[in-house]
Image 1 (cartoon, rainbow, N blue to C red):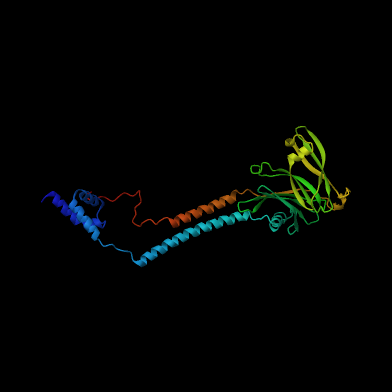
Image 2: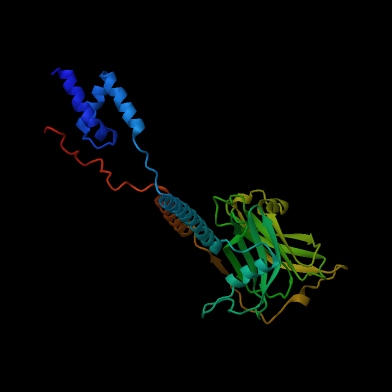
Length: 344
């Protein structure tokens, strides 16, 4: 029998298995090579392919598969949402004070009073916000404790991306005056973010009868190795206020030529009424004799960002798990050796 005829007979016997993908890899290659060169067998294969019954998946199976797909998509969306909510919750634990009357008072009450033998302001002490001011994305709050030492100070906060504030530091101490004007130098600890925050803060508390305040400044010019004393008078325009003055500009106004090498402190304040009479003693409380200063600082935000990164990573893992298609059960690993071919 002609070899080509013999080949055609073999190929035609194999066509049903070939069309249903049941032949071995080597056999499949041989059949495909024959079909490329033999038009009769190729036509027969095309006719047989058209006559093959098309099996449709049962409707129940299709519904199940669609339900599984929807469930996986929903699980992926919930995983992403939960990760975002967890990250937002972590961030909110640090940046959670709004710049409102209640928010500012809550920040002072949460941060300043404390318990223990070394507490400068005892827990439960009534606190009062005197005044506040915003500068860039920072918030300064002047406060006073309603205790025997009339403790007063400054609370410093930074704004987060959620528009709320996190407490960064506080400085405070006892005050021999029940009200009036006091001033202090203020520099941010975060020099990289606040390089220009070199301020002198002037605070007015219950200044209803005070029209002018005379501040006495003392300091040292370290390069010239000399001390100095200067006075400056401020006209007041409110009962309670917080002014953030540029310290370098203040030193120039005081006649200091080299503010970079000079420190300055407000050592005394005199109060005058509308007629120019000295009313300083009206506000003095001689029972306050202690003199101390306290400061508190908040830890860096490194750990917060680490926790948020961990939560984000877990969210990505779960989303990928639910969105990636399942690996077919019969799929071989790429590093497995292929089965031996026919004839070996």
